[in-house]
Length: 57
Image 1 (cartoon, rainbow, N blue to C red):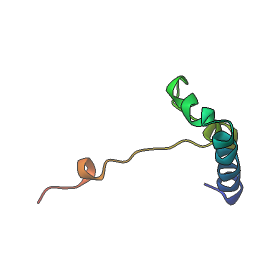
Image 2 (cartoon, rainbow, N blue to C red):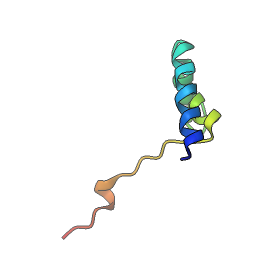
Image 3 (cartoon, helix red, strand yellow):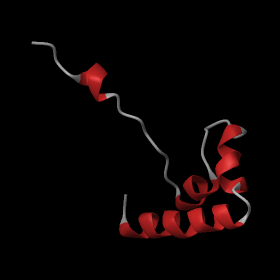
Image 4 (tube, rainbow, N blue to C red):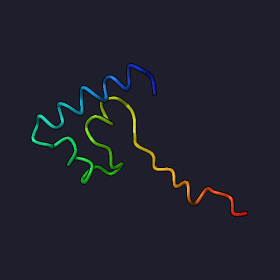
């Protein structure tokens, strides 16, 4: 993530909260599960399951 994307994500997340949280609720209805700040900053949240990726001894 670039500094520009991180800054945009921060600013747009404030806008999402300012709109009564609608930007965050948007991910419930979006087919890619992305909120407003994800869409506007061209980013997405990725979950990495470290337990699954950990090698067993």
